[in-house]
Length: 504
Ligand code: B12
Ligand code: SF4
Image (tube, rainbow, N blue to C red; front, side, top):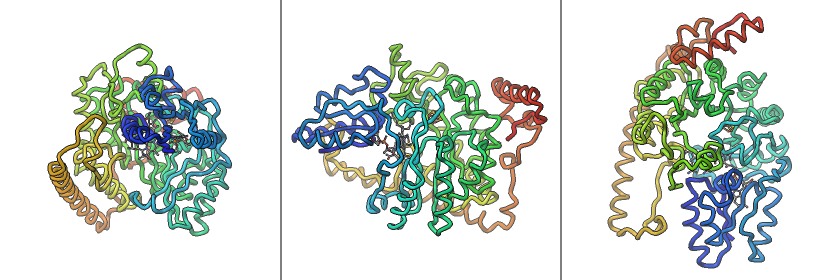
């Protein structure tokens, strides 16, 4: 049996290409993951592209494998895989279920020898672009601290102590505290944990959350910032994101020396190329974010946004390959497709300008974020769109290609031409990469040698003050931003709070 695992929408056509020769050889194939699960959760059971699986005799598995995988294996063994397994309604509890463990030989190829696991699933919010809530649900489910300890020990026995905890919103994992407490005790025992987690923008309001995250070994935090225009956030039902809290939240992470990575979505209805340029400049000046990741707003199959467009019969890009949140898949009210694509690319170069990367390194030195760690991330984020034309999350060190691996229906390329092009591509890309690395290393060394590095400060690093509702562009630039400030003031007056600006 061949099981195609965790297949995302943009990987679905490729997954079918991989399945094709196996099916032709009479081998059982099953496919699962977010594309098929999201489609079966939100659409009619046929869209988008699911009938291609049926035509090929590839079995579709929608939902989570826990509690069901034995049935699938037994069916495959008796050569009787069902055409569709839809277990979306029987969401399993996670405690006691097998935790994802990979032998070192597979983890060895990740940069920084980092493994991953989900400590929980489910998020209470309702962002309209999100697919996760429609597959994993909105109720928090979690692994037990015992299961997590077991997994950490298994990994540590093979020398792995860095983990990406893949919960989309770990701050809403109901067991976050007992999990952190267990990780804190493992660190105290001498396991040098290094963790990356994903959180929402209100996590700093949860008592002890950031402090315990620090003690548990969190070194990087990914924050779903998404946008700085409250109109855009409200339009995407992301009302929990309050721009008046952004600085307080980011500074709280910085005060623990934790690297802040934030996602930023381009293409909300109020966005224009000019407003995006303005917003990137405001972020650079006023928000203590180390690494900013840009995405194009995409109606991902499985999201409410996709479902609404699909039901209304509005045009969306038919090629699933480009549903990778870095291509434009539907129309925008204020930007042409070309303008949107251009500003997406420009946003990367605007943010990762040599000048701003120097500022980021100086801020890191002043807040005790490890410089070498930030340097590695900056290399990836500053180069992958310009050099590889892919999002940093899709990038790697050496791209492996083979002439036999082409999209279904395309003829095989002449080997001489293929390998010639491949060699030239590899050499030229790596030469550019070495140039960028050289420049960044020089900056890093200069900052490392600067005795005043710890004393560096700028607007972004300045503690939140009473008057920033008047002074900071983040809170004054748009009517929606001013309305958000007025709202906070009103609540403050009604509840007798004295402070009127952004505050914790
Ligand atoms: C970790 C992660 C990453 C990592 C690692 C990705 C990787 N390729 O391994 C990184 C950060 C690199 C990443 C990158 C991207 N990601 Co990502 N990622 C995730 C995340 C947070 C967890 C995925 C995971 O490992 N889960 C753990 C596994 C065990 O769960 P699972 O895959 O769902 O599998 C379960 C079930 O689906 C089922 N199952 C799955 N397959 C099969 C197969 C069979 C036969 C059976 C029986 C059952 C079964 O059983 C499993 C256990 O319950 C998810 C969100 C989420 N909460 O799942 C997003 C998510 C999958 N990513 C997403 C996207 C869009 C991307 C990017 C395209 C973004 C970008 N442009 O950079 C890239 C693509 C990179 C790539 N080429 O793979 C989307 C996909 C949406 C969609 N409809 O396709 C998600 C859902 C997040 C979102 N909504 O935005 N990602
Ligand atoms: S906060 Fe994140 S995981 Fe939760 S609904 Fe919004 S996008 Fe999805």
